[in-house]
Amino acid sequence: MLGFLNLVSQWLAIRRFSFLLSIFYASAVLAAPTNTRPSYHVMSERKWMSDPQRPFFLGNEWHLYYLYNSNYDISNPSSGGTEWYHITSTDMVHWTRRDIALEKYKPNPASGIILGDIETSSAVVDINNTAGFGRNAIVAIVTPMADGVQQQSLFYSTDNGYSFIPYAGNPVMPNPSPSTKPAFRDPKVFWDSKEGHWVMSLAEGHKIGFYTSTDLKTWAYVSEFKPENAGVDLGTLECPELYQIYLDGESTKRTWILAMGANGYRYNRTTGTAYWTGKWDGNGFTATESFPRWMDDGPEFYATFSWGNPDNRYSSRYAIAWMNNWEYTASLPYYGDFAGQQSLVREVKLKTINGSPTLVSVPIGGYDDIVTSSKSLSEKTITTDPASASLPSDTEQGAYIIRATISKNDGDEGNEVRFVFKSDGTFSTTVGYDFVRSQACLVRDSLPSARLQGCRSRNAGHDGGIFDHGRDEDALAYAFQNGIHMVASDPHSRGIGCYRDER
Image (cartoon, rainbow, N blue to C red; front, side):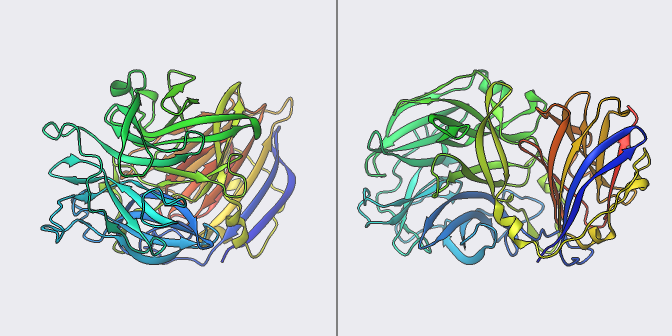
């Protein structure tokens, strides 16, 4: 359980640079010194996990699957194949491990149908029995890959998603060019009630293909979306997703979003989740802008899945992503016979920022419910010396939450304020705000395995103020500000400091 430190609003004098600061702190029991296992993230009990699969709500609980490799080899992370591991939750904070629901491919299957290794896909609750497996059957459209050829197959469950049966007619979507083995993967399926059919978005290299079906078995191609300069700017596209959401919470401004995993190197980023706003006419997507926006500003938010809020379908969505990066995952420390984790579940909304529709996200409110105690921080004077404003030693207990509201008054000196997380002299993670550039910045220093030193910044969109929502566990640090930055940190370094920059 977490403790909670309520740092009441107060003025912190930084020579002539003052801030109104309100911070909340939470702590958990100190983990073993060598433990990098987060306290509140979805992760496997052991071995490898990667992409989450879109959850569904059935039987008063959420059902989530993730790609799991029990034969994980740190020297070759992509080897060994994956299967779907099943977990459930009533609040999307506390998850219960169930078991493997969709098994790895086995050579010489009894059915005689060679499918291949299971990759990222999606499952739906077939409430109208369109596929003929029974009302409320769980139908998964899955990408298996054999000998480098990707195609789509169907699996169904009649026990609420605890186990799946392969459809006898697999594959339901053979690869159109098996000799050249093009990308043909990651189907995301939803029911279009207006058109009365299922819609699939499929990653096809440098474009997204759209298909429709009335029974989840027979699919017809209808159109494609190819981002401008896709191959050069975004690399191979993966994990596409098409959905609707209200803009600024207004039902008259229902907007379509097409999101996908992409390489952001041409945008001074790494891999991440790109998205476009636009219109869907039942058969095709038309973007309102030529180039993408990005759902997250950190390097570890990939293979994103979002799903509707059952209490208010279009006002907001939930989202979860694989918290890792293929660029350096093989170089990360491999502790305790486990590797990989999912992000915290977020609530996502579409808001107008600087005149443009922008996806923003914060952790769901359920994470606040694990808070159990509070403390207060006395007023401090902050100088350019980080040691002048270290926060309570309780931060050494592992997981905690900090919230800060910072404002600069006319005439105050100094341009930037920084929070330094888990600094021990050799490693630090810094969250800062630059009042001149109106930018929030996150720096991950001295972590060679991640190779992402230097500032990762974003425009804050505020007139001299910022709301930082930081969460830190035994191995991870976040900074939220109209979106999110995420970093991995070193479990051996602990403590927090706050200081001002002279610039």
